[in-house]
Structures are given as structure tokens and as C-alpha cells.
Length: 52
Image (tube, rainbow, N blue to C red; front, side, top):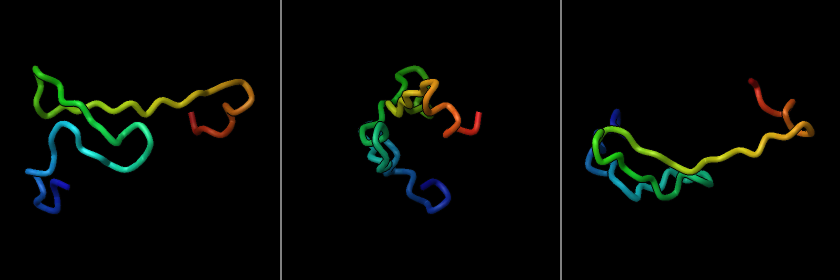
């Protein structure tokens, strides 16, 4: 978004599309830092699905 010149679009509540990244929150002390909730549940059954 920054490379496309869309800096004004980057703010709290931003929706990036994937589950867990549809309502970003902004760090109050570091305004350039945003958080999502994109948790991945890794188990012994699915651990091989992820490139750790």
C-alpha cells in the first residue's frame, strides 16, 4: 500500500483480507506498528503443513 502511495489508507481498523487481518489495531506508542489476530493452530497432526 505504501509503495502504491496509499499511506492514508493505513490506519486502525484496516482490512487486509485474510482471516485474522480484517481489523488491525495500531500500537499507541509506535504508530507505525499494527497488529492482527492471525493465529495458526499447529498440532502434531498438521505440523508438517507449515515450513518451520
